Length: 309
Ligand SMILES: Cc1cc2nc3c(=O)[nH]c(=O)nc-3n(C[C@H](O)[C@H](O)[C@H](O)COP(=O)(O)OP(=O)(O)OC[C@H]3O[C@@H](n4cnc5c(N)ncnc54)[C@H](O)[C@@H]3O)c2cc1C
Image (cartoon, rainbow, N blue to C red; front, top):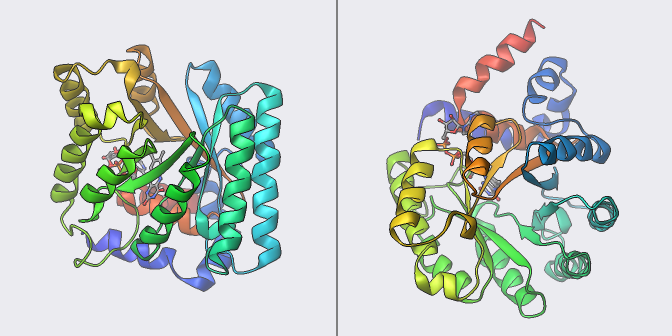
């Protein structure tokens, strides 16, 4: 792992900066590249523009490790209301949530009750609920709660991280239950005991897992195959493999982040591959933004430029 990535991920965990970093004007200017705004209304405007480009979207209100029950309840209400608003606007935009935002660090049953309410509301709105994956210490509980949810609701998907050694087994278990999988490389600072330290190994594992997702067993179970990546070489390899395996472009998807690789998003959509753009918003964006910088330390240059307006 590069030194820059390690430093930026450590900064993302710093409690003082998490609370205060968003007040720095030059960082606020720089983040606008990845975030259309802090409000739900600004997210809707971006989702409409995305739809006009022929792309569907996902929405996530930034926040994590909530320690106050009232705040966890408010987050759940925000998503419930968001699902209703999107339904009335007839906008194809799926919610993506973090369990620690719903109160997982306070009480797992509280988080599950919120998760269940969201899945029920998404189900009623003919929408789909995505569960994000956080640090490796949360993987067991995230898998357990999502599997429990799937027993009641069919339209549920989960993010799995290719940098973790364990993901091969988890992927098999999750796809066999018909739970959708959004495969990503992984955004956190993980120790070498649990995750591949070398980026080339993460990339190779991603490709191996992608092949597993496109195999007949996973397809037969009805699991949605979603690749959450901006890596153009990887995207090309996955598409070539899908073609060889006889999987049609409409049978798998790519999800990317707002503001990253827009021309590639449009090219894929033109080729008939469903693409969704994840639009993040909210005022608690500091740790999330530091992870975006860590993915491409060259982005720090944009922060430096915005320091000078
Ligand atoms: C829809 C979606 C949901 C996600 N959910 C989660 C989650 O729940 N849990 C989790 O751990 N991670 C999540 N991630 C983040 C993911 O783990 C990676 O950190 C991130 O996608 C970067 O990896 P990459 O596959 O694009 O490949 P990389 O090898 O990191 O990047 C490939 C290329 O993409 C471009 N690129 C990538 N990132 C950036 C950036 N920040 N700025 C500018 N260009 C960039 C660059 O051109 C780069 O060379 C999610 C990502 C997506 C797209």
